[in-house]
Amino acid sequence: MTSYILGQAEPYEWASSDRFMRRINTIMQGKTNGGNGPESGTVVVTRTQPKTRKPSLYRVLLLNDDYTPMEFVVHVLQRFFQKNLDDATRIMLHVHNHGVGECGVFTYEVAETKVSQVMDFARQNQHPLQCVMEKK
Image (cartoon, rainbow, N blue to C red; front, top):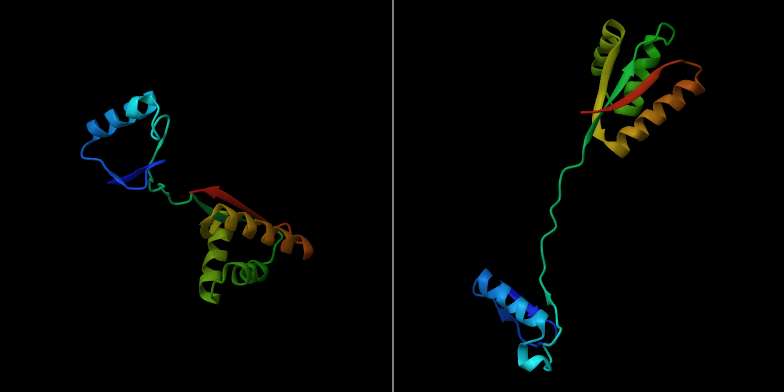
């Protein structure tokens, strides 16, 4: 690993972690060059790779009610979840028979947007359709 010590023009090669720690202690105590040199009070800067993790996923669900027409539910699935007619019909029937059906799995922001769009569209068309999201 090559690191640079602030105030030095050339890289400093670290042979081992023990040597690295002794070097840091020496620098931090200001003992290099008698405590008065260019390395006195300097800090070692190393670059690390940030650890990334996958975002949490959320299921978007439609809830059954006794008033929203089946055709409207199919239309919602096609319009907001890009389902073809067969898949939209299958999901709609699952919602009808089981009370709830999964429209898709998305990141938090996308799921939140889809729920909002479906709820707004249902209200505009005077249907009580409910759409919710839950962490997968």
